[in-house]
Figure 1 (cartoon, helix red, strand yellow):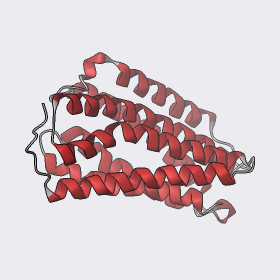
Figure 2 (cartoon, helix red, strand yellow; figure 1 turned 30 degrees about the horizontal axis):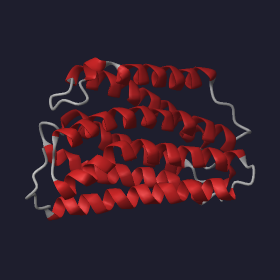
Figure 3 (tube, one colour; figure 1 turned 180 degrees about the horizontal axis):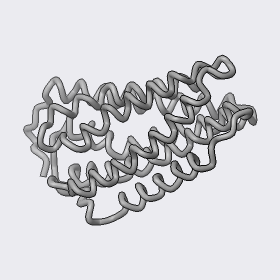
Length: 225
């Protein structure tokens, strides 16, 4: 049961404000994309990308906000664990959608068939691993071995998408080389957190630049409107 006398700590409240602002930004951006798309497939896909990110992250960020305000409880910890599982799946879908955004942004370029296959296969494997009950998402200890495997596979997905955006470079004047930097930052911050934060909680602060990197990706899309 939650502690009825719980007093929120300032760092927790700051995190709650940041998480809430991030989710609202994603939600508003997704609505902007879809409401201004006017049949443009690229903008529709950006809207789907943004709402996928928002919806998936909400499953684990909303419990974190509640925990920051009301304190922890068994129910909240269960919601948080299940939310991490869901967001791990939607985050994988996020990168598959980025593949198709690349194809729509650069219709004159052809994605290497092998690279597209690698992105799809690694994403499917990652999602399948995330579905396994052996991950113990809702327990404190989790499953380090599966964490390493699923995130190693996830890194392959990300590398595949990075290569595509590196290939396109600044074609069309879109300056999408920034996408390479944003994805590198997101992975560089995400992987240490997911692998080491249980033993070293301070590593969790890397989630702030990781989240900002995702917001940067959305902003790149908004600049195309």
